[in-house]
Image (cartoon, rainbow, N blue to C red; front, side, top):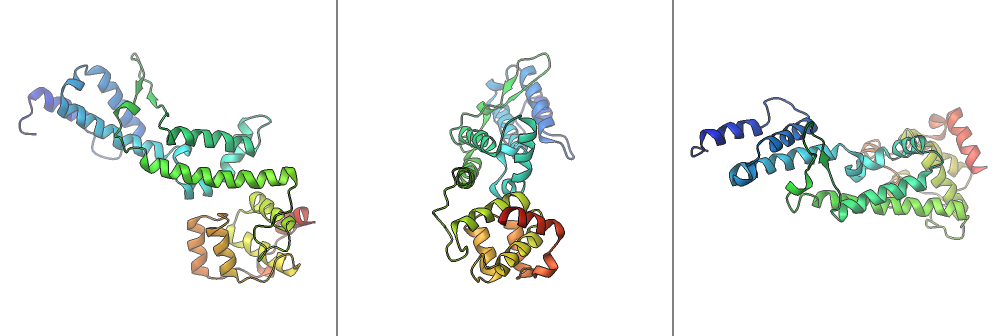
Amino acid sequence: MNNLTNSQESILNKLLPKLGKTEPYEELLRLSLLFRQIKDIKKDNFLFEKFKAIINNQLYFHLKSKEEFYDLDRFKDIYKRLVEEFIEDNIDADENDFIEKYINSQQEIINKTIKYSIEISSYKPLELIQFLKKDFFDEFIRSSKKKIEFLENRLYVLNAFKTEVNEVNPYPLIFVSADIYLKFIEYTHKHIIDYYLDYSYLKKRLENLNLIHSIKDNEFMRILYEEMELISKKDYEEYSIKNKLSSLNKSSSTNRENNFNNIFD
């Protein structure tokens, strides 16, 4: 730092973020403009490495705010909303279409074929991927593989409904039949909003009607989280504190009863 020329110090001060909180995208825009304005920055190894380091940092936080780069837990938490928004924006689309589109986006991340450019007024757009470290996408790739596995499982369930393949009951120690299992999955997809009360009602009502075998609440919720991946890590940790589900009477509501009857009747 002490050996920098006045010109290098001036450019470095421009590269460094301002004090205080700044939005990652605004920083990326500012840096991209500087890159276009400072034509010889690539020739100065010290300044160019500083530039790339800041780009890597700011782009990492910016991408994490985009739905394609959500980690698995966050993705599962808002999955229903993402599907609903996709269907609203695309006429005649359904959940299968959303899954196909999202898996394609994850494959681009895994294959590192994704592009990300910043539009700069009066200059050519700047493609930022060229400045990234080799291991930049490693965390995102691991997350993408997990999300693809989750989506492929979801796709399997959806196709099971469409083709009416009811021969296989993957959880015979819980559900009395494959038909009840598929209806259970349908209910969880359509009507789980408050995970604690909704799953409390669903389990207790199924037990009351002898549609599932006897199973302790904690084991039931463990399977929902670890094996079926129907609840998020955050919700499961919150449940672990409660350590039991609510009773049928306490979790019952007119809306839950109607939703249950519409599916299980």
